[in-house]
Length: 469
Image (spheres, rainbow, N blue to C red):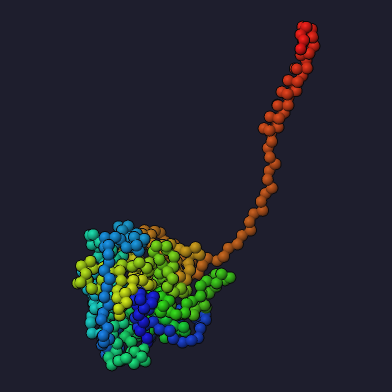
């Protein structure tokens, strides 16, 4: 599988919804009418000790990512401020919850004191090595601790993180060399290792799993093992599985937007770009990206009938994988192969929701995974149609998710049906009430007549009195 770079393009290196070795476009046909299939439990991988499928090695002459330290560390980042996390922490900090981050690994950092190794499917580490910086940034958004004098913190600073390295852009199968076909065939991180990582995370006791990786295909992908793994995690292990919706730099074809002539039509019949694991809608919560400054869907977010909610995916600040050289511990960008890029993408929308899931699970420990997802969706700020394929049920609201009453049922993932009604026929206006005017006119006329009569009557009197003009 062809490895992809982070981000929306080669410059935006850390927006790795591109999946770092998982995102490819295969097939040429368009499939219609295919909805999320029932998971095939026989495709569930065994829970073996994490290991690469083949012997791997670091790519030659490819140093690990470097970071761009944040400037004003005292300022609360815009996404964090928009989400109102300070208020949400009055109700929950995620204490007692464990979030597995299946990504490029999670580097140890003083602000991830509760980081535990979860295994390595890329090399011989334990999951707490991160050459790419992506997994560390994701974990920071979920659970970075609060520090006096610094505005940035994770959504659930009381939660524990399990780091699982499942993919990387800095490793390759040993002996690949420079042959392009071998590079395509021997990328580290694929659907098999992703399925194994999901199963392993669930068996390690994670209560929430974050997957900021995608696989794109123009036909139904060969991901029955992913379906089996997310079903196992969500149903058998009661884990909230949160996944990125994908970026359009990785998913080259974009699913059509709503048809204005048929807004409530079957969205699944219009799919031209399948995204996995997002398409396993029965078992995962798929997250699109919004611009925190405007609340509108980000230009790069991939729409689909599986999108559940949205969260900020732009203007991101998170933990720095190179904290030893940066006492501030936080970053706003990474340099990948000499190109500096900002941190943005649905990869970073997903951890905001994973952190919120940890907050909700800590506040409502009796809720099942499915009920946690429903609460997050029900309390989101809905778009005008109630749901749309870019932002799902809308932008998350942590405070509402922790405090509001939610309905027993959510409407289906489609916009509200168009409604029409007959406008009432206007009633003819009432005749004007001219009583006051008439009284005034009549009174005036009477007075005038009396004055005239009085004047005329004065002539005889004046003659008798000998008065002359």
